[in-house]
Image (tube, rainbow, N blue to C red; front, side, top):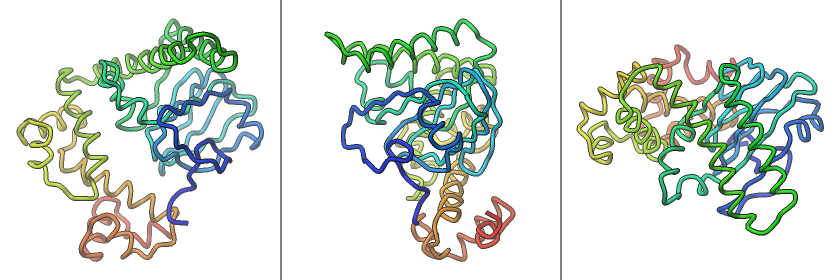
Length: 289
């Protein structure tokens, strides 16, 4: 196995070719079939949103575990390795949608949804019950529209989908705003994360990222330090090491092949970078996991 298991929908072998793919189901419908245990996997090219309305879950995202109680939402960008251990009879919804349906939007929604796509997000809905009730209602309406299509279904589905995601984007914005930073700085960092996701294997330096984002390197670094308390360079290294951890955990590739796949010319240098970041050598990390 070269990567974590990949599915369109967990446990199914079908693949997605539809750029407008959208699937919504009750959380219990699939989780109950697998005894409430969803093994680690990922979805290439698909954004997934889990809305836990009632119950508890231990969410595994990459190599970290997060215990959550409902109501809460978990936003998972494409290719994020994740798994869930649910308390029996947990209730909620699971939405899966093609990334292209969210990123190629010509209107304002594309920019507004960007924070949901740059990194996994955990959203506590217990603090805002009106928002929780609106989101639950929107999910119910979307499920009904998908199951009982009527005239104008595509337009209604698109409107309901955007309404759900924009409600969550607002909550994420509130969380981010509480951490400080100007909206323009948050937008810059979101665009940096999106570009980093495309280019991290190419080992661009920070001036090159800054040029592509039409800002100076110092401005990019200031925004990164202010909002993440890390330099822009540190974020590039974190992204590389995240992918390294995924490959070491879910593949049997030799460490040298992992290094070359991640754009390193020298496996020994890759090993030094990995140990500097994680305190373990790649082989020690693999044995531990």
